[in-house]
Amino acid sequence: DGCARTVSWAWELLQRDLDALGLRRRGLHSFRRAFQSLAIGDGAPRECIRALAHTGDRDSTDIYLSIPWGDLCAA
Image 1 (cartoon, one colour):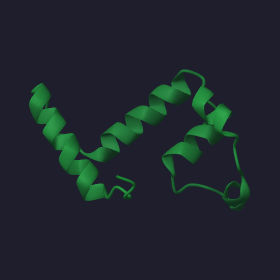
Image 2 (image 1 turned 30 degrees about the vertical axis):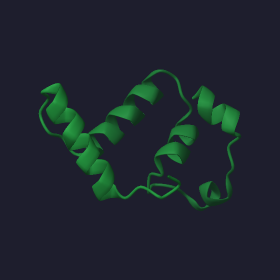
Image 3 (image 1 turned 120 degrees about the vertical axis):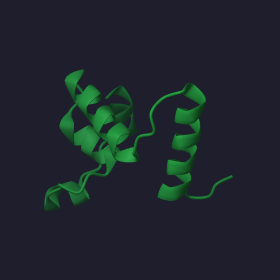
Image 4 (image 1 turned 135 degrees about the horizontal axis):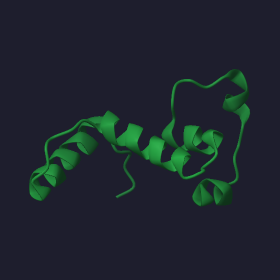
């Protein structure tokens, strides 16, 4: 509907999906970490994953870095 998603909204949907699948409840950080690990393990450039995941360990250069959408999709 064009609204920004909140962390609590995403967490609630994640818990609902995990319950429906019969899986143990996990936090969003677990999935964020898994995504980054799998993507980088499969060869995605770290700077692309950092841009997608909005990690806090960015240096001042990253603030002005704009990675083309095609490169992010390929990663």
